[in-house]
Amino acid sequence: MAQLSCQNLTLGYEGKEILSNLSFEVNSGDYLCIVGENGSGKSTLMKTVLGLKKPMSGKVITGDGLLQTEIGYLPQQNVVQKDFPASVREIVISGNQGRCGLRPFYTKQEKQRAAENIRRMGIEDLQNRCYRELSGGQKQRVLLARALCATQKMLLLDKPVAGLDPKVTADMYTLIEGLNKKDKITIIMISHDIEAALKYSTHILHIGNETFFGTRQQYLDSRFGAERGLF
Image 1: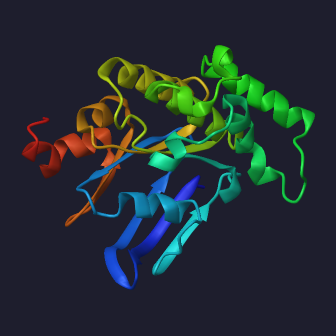
Image 2: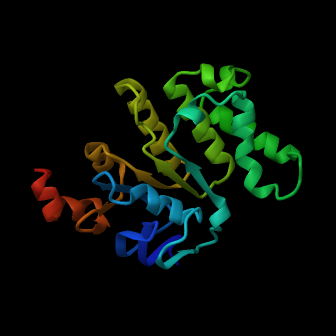
């Protein structure tokens, strides 16, 4: 059974339809890149998958042992998030909140999970620093560690390298690739970087006036690839 299945989704806001009749499946270990024009509904789709927004019609179904509450999420940063006045450790450990329920404290296991993900992202020396004092690349590592506290199965990443310089961008892509290949975490990533999408992904979902879903090679062989001169 697919880890995630979207069936005949119609998405929109304020009664305005922006995406209709969308269906695709994601299996464990896939690396799916979502590409398309601005305003085509990419972020709305991601929020729908997370259960943060209801579809106008259609279904989002999780399977293969995945619960919707077990999906890690790295949102696109806004100004408030960039200036959040908390320590790195406080932000990372807050990724466990989805499993806390009404419990007002973190368990020993949750604290250990946060420490492990801080090490995994190579930010041990930053854990007592204030988040808003960090560089853009450091902030993204913190938020990725936070997302990993919520999951060992699936990560949703909304433009994770937006605004980063080329070296930090390359480092972030390498980190994400390692999570996918070494840790077997399914990746669903919104990207404007089609070259990176084709380098790292196993599957491409293109949304806009026309929709495409398939493997990386099928995308290269399609007219979308031909129009971009990618074949």
